[in-house]
Amino acid sequence: MFLVLGLGNPGPRYELTRHNVGFLVLDNLSDQHRIKLDQHKHQCLYGIGEVDGLKVVAAKPLAYMNRSGVPARSILAAFDIPPENVIVIHDDIDLPLGKIKKKNKGGDSGQRGVRSLIQTLGTDRFWRVRVGVGRPEDREDIVDYVLSPFGREEMEMLNEAIDQAVRLVEATLKELNNPTNQTEEQTGC
Image (cartoon, rainbow, N blue to C red; front, top):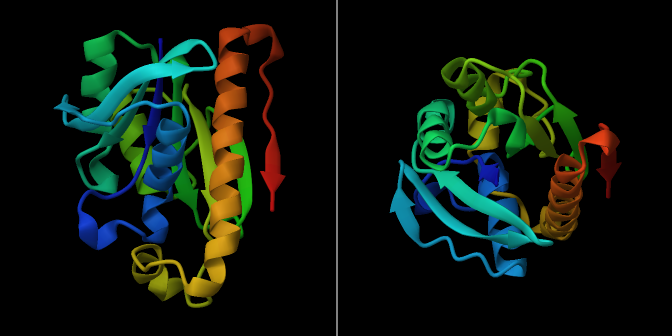
């Protein structure tokens, strides 16, 4: 069994913000594979289903981004899923909007949700699908920037990035099911 974990902030206030791109990708993946995110337990909103024949738990932590580790640990323990079978989808300000990268292991690159996961799980041995949201010109505005909604002019590129991220999650699941072919890859709009 695999866990696909979309990172974001709960609540309607954050729904279409840059920081919630992990939720947006997870919603699309779940819709495409008919996984209903309708279970509230383990501090997550989640559903169980299949992606290309592989059993998957698709989940959104019901904690703020910088506290994502506690719900992640809870759902991993509930389903006895090792961190190596986890794909975390999150925003990345170091990548331009539309750029998608896959990474296994390593540091948090300043992403506080990933930092919380590493600290709480006690390991960095999980996969990440990093979805570029761009960086503000003024470094002082990073918090306001990631908590701001995408602009109208960005929506087409955002939708393309979400579609690409879903395909990359699907491909990563296949690789995890066949560990001899694991690679890091990137793509972009």
